[in-house]
Length: 221
Image 1 (tube, rainbow, N blue to C red):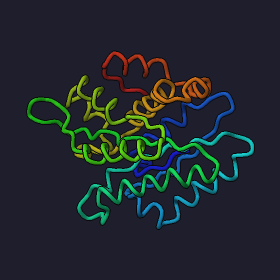
Image 2: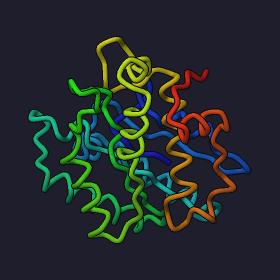
Image 3: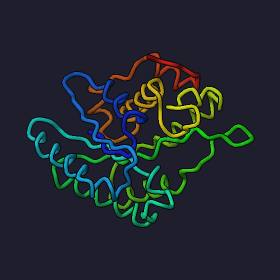
């Protein structure tokens, strides 16, 4: 299950769900434009928790939680301290419902500086997500670090090919959804304590994984 501020069109969630196998299932609960506050206020978070409660007797529910792109906007009404506290509350909610939360740092934007490096515009919310994970002893996946490394490797011109629209350096087109959804699957297989238990249920595409690991551009369909 995924709770996030990036939904289709534009997110990685469905790209990740396509990697699930061997009887595992998932639901993309992400809502475009949401903050940690509006996602709860709008009733979307309650649906996530209801799904955990419904499925915990037959499955081991994991909930990936990624926010930040919208929380950090000056118009969001969410301070960094509130953002951190909101994530900590989400972690507690998932555990109370019977699931395992996994905090995820924000997917990198694809804006580059004059020296050809990704602008680290999400540094404050990335740090806050890691702080929330530490405070709650919650697993976290550093999607921001992995995506930044990959984007720096393929360069600005190729990175822009994943834009949903020509000037949108945040949301993803279909190819970007596949690439970063598979990146998420790869990270879950390798970077959390439960990786050995869940690896058999996550099968990223071999061609996409090879490109990510080699730092080479790929345009999958």
